[in-house]
Length: 325
Image 1 (cartoon, one colour):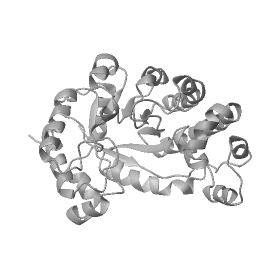
Image 2 (image 1 turned 180 degrees about the vertical axis):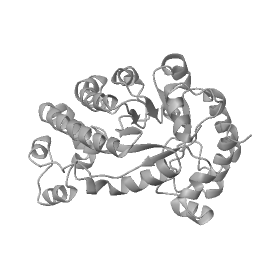
Image 3 (image 1 turned 180 degrees about the horizontal axis):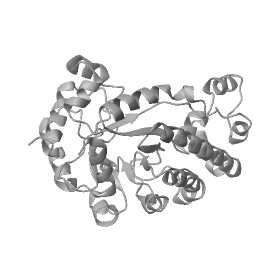
Image 4 (image 1 turned 90 degrees about the vertical axis):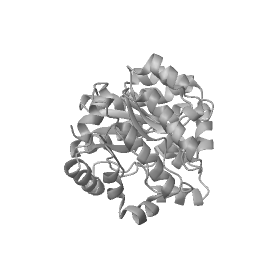
């Protein structure tokens, strides 16, 4: 069974191999250290038999240079102003050339399960509005913001269809909603403004017989039932350190969606406490192994994590995964 098949079966809840798929968010902060130790990021991926590839690329919905120019001239980017600005054409396939190259290596050469970072509804517009202003607009400019969201959802569908056409296995929607304790906004606002626009994208992706996953940091307990209604196949990171209990997942949701995560970069990996690191990794494996779980870091490995500690963690994860006989 290749990596694509192992991950696909795990997401569906059909993995009876006793092998846990592995992945790591090691882009950005620790790439230089990995390249120095392993020769390249690809060699790190091969060494630890990583089963997935997280792919980035393609256009951003708005011309950020134009938005910066407007801000510099004293114009606040409100929902009303944004609706006057054209969105970037998502159908210029020249903008996806890096995606093609990544798929050639990861999917065709390495037979990994490939998923691509894509825009949600809330998170991507924080870059346009600023998060504080954005949260205010959810209360004070609701009608105009709803139209911004609808337009964003349609753009997201076009983007997703293009990368599915290229051969992507899963659309990974990044849309941070959580704080350490709860949502950044009310469940009612989520249901009214965010839910219907995620539904537009998810229905389109499911019509293409493609997996769809959600990334949201923080505590999103209050909308887990809504996430199930939306039809997400997988959640990352299901953040235990923000009050997301694995017991709740196993008792209520394991037949609804899979998990990607388990190695916490907020509390466990990168703090130099090898005894605690080992204990935590073993605990999570004991809790989630043979469930709908792909072992991964809960977010990007931070720069304070040494390459020695990263190797220690993934040597152990590889051992516990069942890949080494």
